[in-house]
View 1: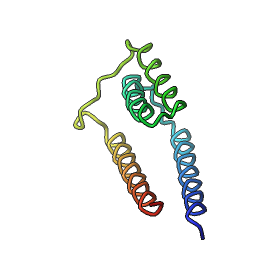
View 2: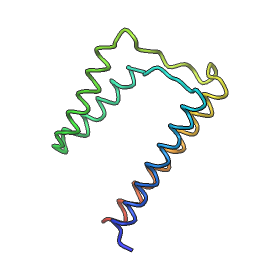
View 3: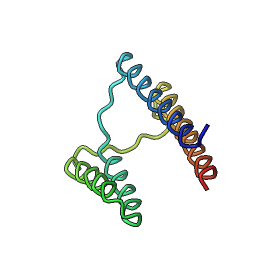
Length: 115
């Protein structure tokens, strides 16, 4: 099996996992308003990655996130402390961090395999 086929299968599995997670969250009634402060920060990070790599679509995406964040500046939320979170929110944040850590680890493995 070629490396590109393995990567395509891995990406498809991850996409299906994200879609299932979103459907389950919607069915359970989990609603969250957008955190525009986070969108602004993510936009800055994407711009920082897009500029040196001369990836213009990535720069435009970062710019869009930054504009959406700035336009909604009055709706910015302060991040609550861990002790202020409900058990459900804590569990959700832990799951998100674990998923992101796994994705970073898979990225490192992919980088090592592709070298």
